[in-house]
Structures are given as C-alpha cells and as structure tokens.
Amino acid sequence: MKRHLLTSKHRRGFGPNGQTASELIIQDSVDRVTQTFLQASVPIDKFHRLVNRDSIVAFRSLGSIPSIRTVRRSISKKWIDAMPLHCKKLLEETLLEYEIDWQQITNFVTDGARACVSLGRRLNEQYAIQHTLCAAHLLHLISQKLMESFPNINGLCKLVRVFFKRGIQAGRKKRWRSQNITDISLPSKTRWGTWLKCVSDVFMRRKKLTYFL
Image 1 (cartoon, rainbow, N blue to C red):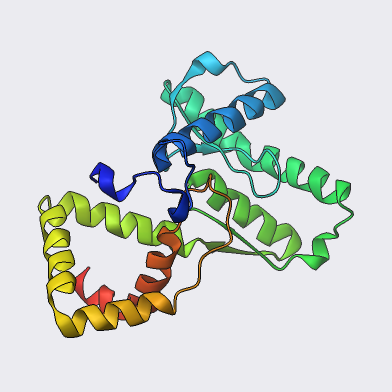
Image 2 (tube, rainbow, N blue to C red):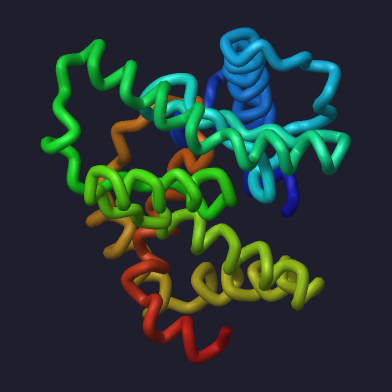
C-alpha cells in the first residue's frame, strides 16, 4: 500500500505531526505491550516484533488488546494455551473494579487470534457470553488476501479513482455519497482511522463481494 493512502492528515483522523497511521499504531502498541509484559512478568527479550494476526493476545484492560509474537514457537504455544485463563482473570478483576456483573454482558467482540477464540469458548461455557468476530478484521483479511492475490491491485485502484474523477455522473454520485457520510468520533490513534467509512460502505455490500472471493 502506497504512502499516499496512509499519509497523516489531521482531517483524516491522524496526528498533525507528519506521522503515518502505521507509526502511530506501532508506537501506541509498543507502550501497551510493554505494560502487559510488566504485569504478566514475561521477559520482553523473548519477543521480536509486533504483528496484527497469528499472535498471542493479552488483555491489559477493557478495550486494550496489544498483539505480540514470540521468537520461540514452544514458548508461543505455551503462552497461547495459558492466555485464556490469564485474560479471564484480568477481565474478572476489571469488571469487579467497575462494579459490572457478568450477567450484564451478553456479547464481546475480538479478532480471530487463537487466544481470543479460546477465551470466547471458555466465557461462553461458563457465563453464556456470545463471542463475535470483528467484521472490520474480516474485511482487513479480505483486503490483505486481495493484495496478495492481485499484485496489480494498486493500479486498478488508480483506474477507479480516475474513473470517478473524470466521469461526470459517477463524480456526482461520489460527491453526493460523501456528503452523507458523517465523520467518525474516534481518537487519532486507532487502527482504522477514517477508513471505517470505507469499511462500513464495503460491509453493506458484503453479499455482492462474496461472489468475487
């Protein structure tokens, strides 16, 4: 993905200091992962880089899920197997702190990492809480698969942009649709930024997209 698609613009939901979305995400994730290591007493030298998927997932608090990957597969598997119980304990402590009863929770959303799926199964068995996989992560995987399967996808995207720019009727429709899309109220340090607008639009057409996947 070329830089102009991720260029930091304050109006796009990113910081005004010239940072890209990836830089903001990585910096924020590093801080959260470091705190998670300290809480779990895990040597940070056992891990080497941040990833989005196929990773160990640890809950630092509600709404904060840093992702990390181990260098040694044996340690990674051991941690993944142990993480659901660790996550469950942290969730119970957090809910107790905010005086929230488990019976008030009917559903929770995560990505499809092994630890999250295992945690969802445990919570469903014990508390009858339904686990839902995030639609945005699913769309991210679909777009990632398309990028891998069609190396010339960037060129095709440029052609689409040119079509909307030059096509009078298409341009009017695009401008009309853009005016009816409201700005999202999210902090700048978010994985999706204003791409949520695009995700929402694509999700509404998910049935048609399945014919091409």
